[in-house]
Length: 294
Image 1 (cartoon, helix red, strand yellow):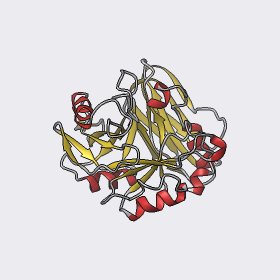
Image 2: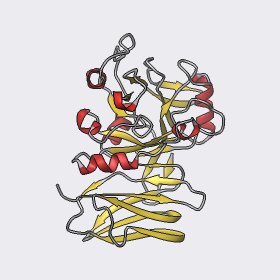
Image 3: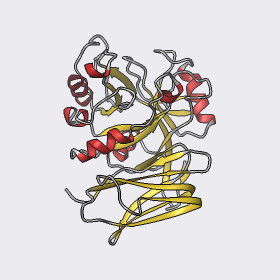
């Protein structure tokens, strides 16, 4: 567990992990041991088309999960990869590899799970995907393996901001999507979930759905509205940036050394805002959106 600068207890979690059960290079036990040694409190095992129940492995909390996709490869066809987190039972998608994305989402929900749109930049998803998959409220803003592999599209901030411009600001995870375990896609990202040390899987997922987390490669970050200002607070970083529906305005970025706070007076035309902070080593943390007006 981690105590943040606001005094809140947080679990460090990776919500996207593959093992030898599908196409990962380590066994579930080896993956759990590796993440535990790196200070994580939990991981979700999300092997392709194989539902994994929650529990514990190698002394680490394991969250139930799986990953399902539309079995397509080209952006113009509609490549959709959907994580199933916290399902109470197997969504029973395993034998139907050509299901449309909407049906995959429906089956996850019917199984009591939380669907997450994985790596939209890697998949070349268009912002209207957020509207097409109306019951999916969470996506990945960063996906480590999408940089470690051959696509070089790990960052989905532009997708998320354009979806927010269409009226759907999504919750933003940073995940590893671990496959290779070769020093470039494991223990790189975490979701810092505000919850108790003994939180159950359902309590952890409820906190995620409520947006009680920030996503990070290392730094800590928090965002709030205070009076007529947006205030971002963080661990020492070299850049603090704001992202809104406005393409450009003064005061959206601070650069320097050991920055820990940034303030911005809310503009009448701003509908939403989120923040990113980047430290001297190039590691970034991401807040969720604050909706300022509809």
